[in-house]
Amino acid sequence: MAAPALAATKKQPLMERPNILIVVADGLGAYMLGCYANTEIRTPNIDRLAQTGVRFTNAFASAPAAQEPGPRDAALSDALAGAGYNCGSGDAFLDTQTPAKPFFLGLAWPSPATVSVAQRDLDLYAKTTFEATGWEQAAPNATHKEMLRDVPGNLRKYAAGITTLDAQLPALFAKLQQRNLWENTLVIFSSSHGFLAGHHGLWGDGTASEPVNMYEEVVRVPLIWTWPSRFPPQTVRNDVVSSHDLLPTVCELTHAVPPAAANRDGQSYLTFVYGRRLPKKQSWHDVVFARLRNTEMARDDRYKLVLRDQGKGPGELYAEVTDATEKENQYDNPQYVNVRDRLTAALAAWRARSGA
Image (tube, rainbow, N blue to C red; front, side, top):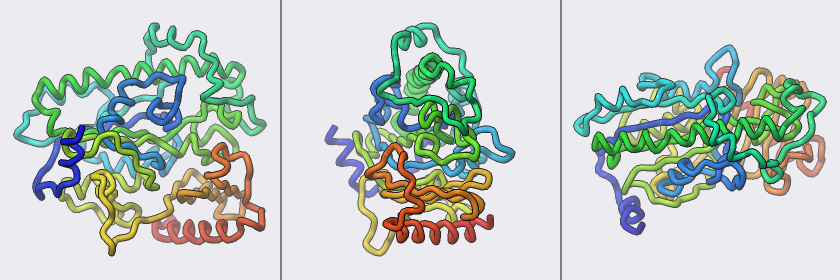
């Protein structure tokens, strides 16, 4: 354990360029994984991946929905542009790769609700009640009430889909080792958005309610970086990062020049991945943002602000440290007016930068 950790603290050669494998899951919230403290859904291979590298606890999606008129997450789409992005196992692509030339491969995992679930995985959850994972009766504003008539039953199928997808990783990593590619391959695992599997009495992504929502279950996503002997294993980072930050980070690692839009909306967190501190003259953004239809979110390490129609519609403000389940809306609470105004101003500045 000590050797990789020590190696990660040293300055890496300037022209060291790894193979890059990005696995992006659809509809997989961070709270659904064992490495993020879920005790009921079995994800042993993702959990093992987290043990070998760096896990971010405050990573957020910038567009928490799957079926929208545009890219489901423009930030992720930009990061994966030009990569060998596909929904398969990647075997055919990896069979053509050699250690002499770095590759960039992106793999898209479908929603756990749409995969062909192995019976053995269904059997794992036959008696699971998901009381620890948590769920509630249908909310009045739910858009998929039919899925909320039997939440435990539907959760068993969803959880089995997650476990079935998780089981794809060993064969993928074995292929990398077979091709002598593993030691120089950076693996990034994340999700385009999360999923409300009964939380808040809703079923689905940000469109599971009317109006759309920005609950933690749909915006907080897993983010794991691992690269053998380069990044410190068993590392947990609490820095607030966004999918907007992925492209600048990959560009810094590969010494590529990011497009102007990437620097406008995101910032490289490569220093955090290496387990280092930022230089004294460099600051980190303390607020990340998301947008879905007419709804926008500003989130820092303690609070979340949700505005609709740029503040003309109903707003929400949650104190995440003391109200992690987001049950108490503090938007009209005078005690939080300074927080609300600060995040409103940050959201307005982001809106102006992004041209929305």
